[in-house]
Image (cartoon, rainbow, N blue to C red):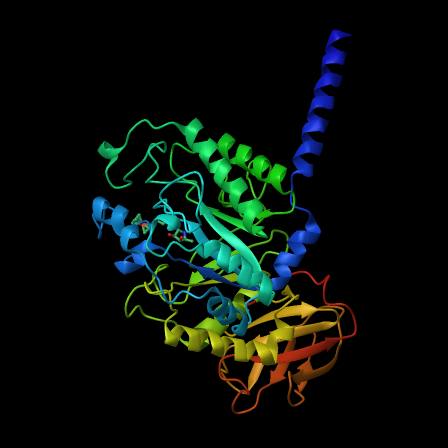
Length: 433
Ligand code: H79
């Protein structure tokens, strides 16, 4: 009898836990809004731009700690203009923007009440995070915040130099987490971010429980705010053990995934923060990166690093503008679509919406593009988006698509396949390049 009662009790506790766990998940409608956006701007910025080295990681490497930690005394990005940054994102066709409010070096780009190591104590003084939040609101770009877990500058965080463990001390994680909560509450209530992009979860002082505690805390402040998967200790998949709402492949395009939301973060050059003469991706690479991401059912958070005076390099603005020009023509095949059914490869990828498949052709190998046929589906019409009709020969196994001598768009051409049924439910089709 006792055993049965205890069992019932246990079941009750478990189901309450399950309900509670579900309650704190970000609502699906909010996640759908996020994934419909497909393209966002990542901005890495801070006092380190004065050295042109990597944010966070160059501290105690290319830049001595004492030098790095004093850079903010001279940080004065006079050309910073939030409206210009946001307009650059908007003109690129980006629907959201994520700013490094705090990176691993601990410097806060907003005037936090909880640490003196912040922008109000630099010569610049102005609230970069706040001005961006406002400019985003004004221009209809969704505002998001990057906030890393680890903080090598904070005396309460036990690791101060990831390259030399002898420099590390005990710290006080309780005090550290309290400050983190205060800062998070401050940015959530002041700037109303749509999404929080965490990072730096991998160091030893941060535990699985810490991640869960902070996720619940965030949800208690604003239940709708989206959180990426780098707050907990598990970042490879989304399950009961992990924390967060979407996966975050870094510097690579994620695999096609129709079940778990994901967002690739990729730099326009090589370094996250500004680097003089950093190598920039070609327009073709930029467009095909975005398209392959959408074809895999993911978002692209494309990073730029503004220069130390606060301006975005002209060549980067131009490149982004060119992406925006492509999206003006072909945006219908990217925004609010699903990836697939064809898994993307080096030759082509696909997105879908309603009864249409948008076939993105990256390169022309010869006059015929052969792709696997979709069982039980008839193509009723096929044409280049904004262009000529396309001839397709279908047999049991393949569609043979006739291509002109030159594709209409050298960076990525789009062929629309109109189906006799909805494309949404078609299972993913593996392809060979
Ligand atoms: O903010 C950007 C990166 O700074 C951050 N995530 C993106 C969005 C990030 N921090 N750490 N990592 C990603 C993992 C990377 C570790 C390494 Fe390294 C940094 C590998 C190479 C450079 C440490 C330093 C190990 C070798 C050098």
